[in-house]
Amino acid sequence: KDKNGTSNKFYNQYLEVVGEITLIDEEKKLLEMQYVDEDGKYTLLVKGHLTDEVIMASYKEGEKVHLLGTAKVFKAKTETEPNTIELEGCFIKGIIE
Image (cartoon, rainbow, N blue to C red; front, side, top):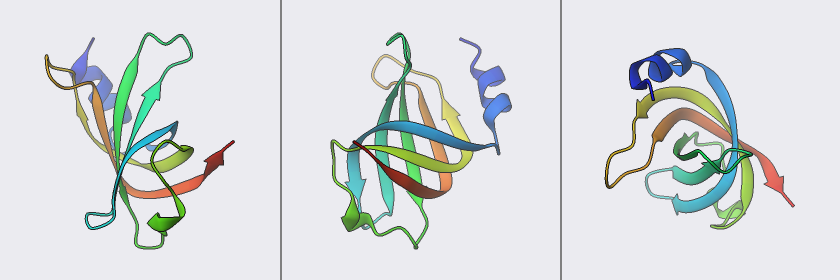
């Protein structure tokens, strides 16, 4: 609920987020995924700006993956958008079966 506190806490931190891929944009080197906490009470849209080393064709929407990157932008939810965090310099650690 504290947008500034959350933003400050995670800004420039290297994070690992697990979630399901909802969008892959090869042209923009962007992967979007949905993170849901263990209790199912909190959701977060994660936008990962991937490094050139990531072979995006290796992944597809609906797969659950580990995404690693540096947090740069946090946006609190609005009436039309969910809580969103943007990560830079991202790698995908692997697919979760």
